[in-house]
Length: 115
Length: 114
Image (cartoon, rainbow over all chains, first blue to last red):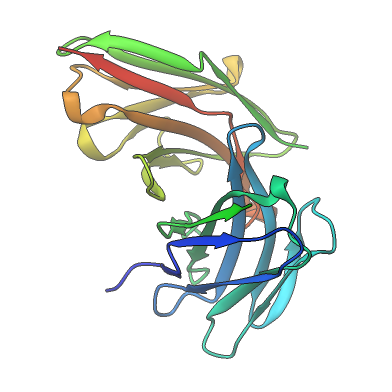
């Protein structure tokens, strides 16, 4: 079974631009979450999508948005990029079939550098 | 609200020595607790999880952790360190009602001395 796939692995963007990151979850997983990892703030929850609906949201500005498609693939968009958006963006998928299936499986991340 | 505190941002041990990474949690509801490992430029890999079953949890690569409710702790141990264990380790907490929103600790970087 293929793991969580994130594309691209690396991105360099200029301040003010926008960027879209993609995440394909493990087959059968309908929950997809996004996290931002920076040296200063650590790992922070951005949002979660389930069955094409945003189900949970962290404390990030509206420049950060996402969506989920009917095949559970998810995209995350950041508009008007700032230098502080430079980070490793991690996607995680979960299988909610069964009460004990609680762990999240993470992709390798997309390293975004804003210059 | 839930939170996790990892004591020690950097731990260094000799190869073959005991590894002990400390984690304390705060949760107003029964917690689910996890340890994840991250190698450079990689994502997070689950080492082990506690979900209210056995309090001593065994994970991959010889790691284990013990849930102690009275101490609100979930420390990670490994009897004998290996060079390949050098990585960043994250303790994390969530709950049944908010399983998708994982709260992570700040991480502990583990170095192994030859």
